[in-house]
Length: 76
Image (cartoon, rainbow, N blue to C red):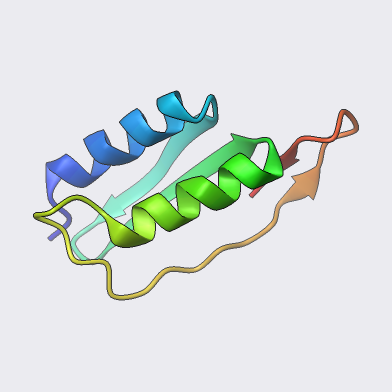
């Protein structure tokens, strides 16, 4: 089960990194978000989430690039 603290953690990290984040799905074994913003900050978000909060153990993650936006930002 994905602890509620993980969603809160992701939301706070996205806000601190000035990223747009939308939760796409939550299941017993999976938490899917869509994040957009500056590529380096999206990378930082990915790293932060892979480490996760103390009560969450991230065993695996998958990253998919959706498309590039003309102003240099990327969605992933």
